[in-house]
Image 1: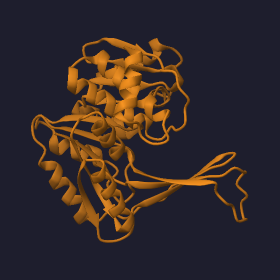
Image 2 (image 1 turned 135 degrees about the vertical axis):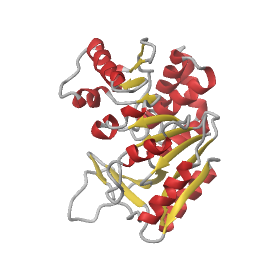
Image 3 (image 1 turned 30 degrees about the horizontal axis):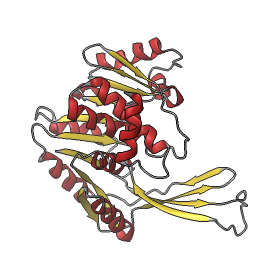
Length: 302
């Protein structure tokens, strides 16, 4: 079974305006949407859309948390969230006008009891399971919670996938995650440099492998993606043609697509292509991509 963890899920409230935002005045929208997510939930959704069963773990609170969990279940994903006693899960406001403005909420406090309950759930993972950790850590959890979780599961035969940045990622490489996914800018920042060529990107990805990572998937926005495998191969793919509508969840979709592709075929090139198709399909959609669109774009990459 694949498990994802979303520490701080959210409802994204999208407000579209046909005029510039006028601070201090009453502004009127032309349309609104609500999208339910968080990085782990995004991964779970794309996995499900590609036919891969999985379980979404995490924390939720209040009426917004109940709505998030209900949406996860509606998508056919097994939801095993811990409901917090106080607070509400986040509502992030995204204003799309002449310029885009975002207000990202902090989210509820996570008690020690709830945190301990999550650790106990994760202790139940067994050999052959996959754990996907993605995103930042809420301020009420230990800053090294990724390390704590992977250390508890280390040696149990669980496959780790980590989508994080800087120290959060560097500190878990010793647990030999199967896959990590920095983008090219994040990869350069880890080593205090700017990466300009494919060879430079490969060189620094291999430094992460020397520190423990098995496979390094580097997303490169309009330049496509690169994969450096644990057996030393380098795969490269460009970007499919399409109109970008949305960047939220594209990286999560790439991770999910790669994992789904590798689970189905064991082929790195196929996994990279499906991951790229999934990330692009979400970028070309208003919400997370459907399985049909992902498969359609994948066919063009083949």
